[in-house]
Length: 387
Image 1 (cartoon, helix red, strand yellow):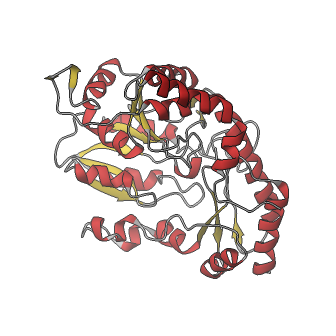
Image 2: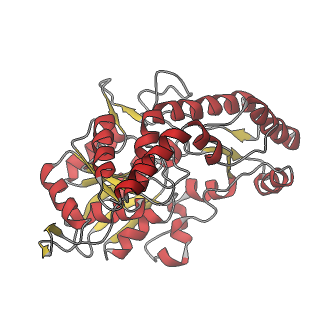
């Protein structure tokens, strides 16, 4: 058996080596390192894949979130609602812009924003919602769209973990994650489902005026060199990373399917174990399929995350490491409990699901190159320990 990796980027690279190498060599030959032809080509390719009017590449996923909020013209003190159970970048940019972050609990099955908690958090100062499509599963966008329309709120999708996922609406229509709200953002960090070989990110929108504003923001507020029309930042996707992403994009659906297949293996192995709760794929509760199926592709499994309910999560984490099985705890501390984001507005009883998840979740190896003997070894090791 080959050594198990949490993410096996080297083996993935070997499958597309010639295409990637040629793209990088093209950049070196042209010396167009910033905003070169490959950036524009990748942008067009991704617009076509997502069926979205505008893709604006930028330097990383955190910048994408910040720039998306800047483009919407949110003002100091405006309240932005997002989830308590996610990576800190989501709330970090809200605080950096002097907006007011409002953290709410998540759904116990999908780990995405809890709709009832969202409704309760809205005040006259609320201006935007940031649903996070956590671990690769799209949040309940039917409900979020209805709430946003009722209260005249912006929707900024944090799609850093779910690029390639489809959302099926109640009427049966589908749309790619990140293209549903006013603006969507993503990260191309190397371990993402569509990752480059450094940092990278992008912003998506179907709004022409918003796209124009954002294109200025990412480039120092310039539309014409040395003429600054808006307050901007320096956030660009470099040409080498665009070349890597252009080479990998045609494989994204295959990558996502490979992750779903690994998730199916895990789910089958752990089925009906009293101490394990496996992830489901039911972002739209009206679909309620509750499984990883071929029809509902709302989950692309950036992470495969179990809940260990018998108090043995930490012991299992150490045991797996002793067996050279990488694993991780995403996330060990709720955002409302982090030093940077503590606030007297928050009460512990408002976060029952998050406070439980930080004690029970564990993420297993998940990537496109997992082999059956590796999956068998991982699942047998876990079951032997828990039994």
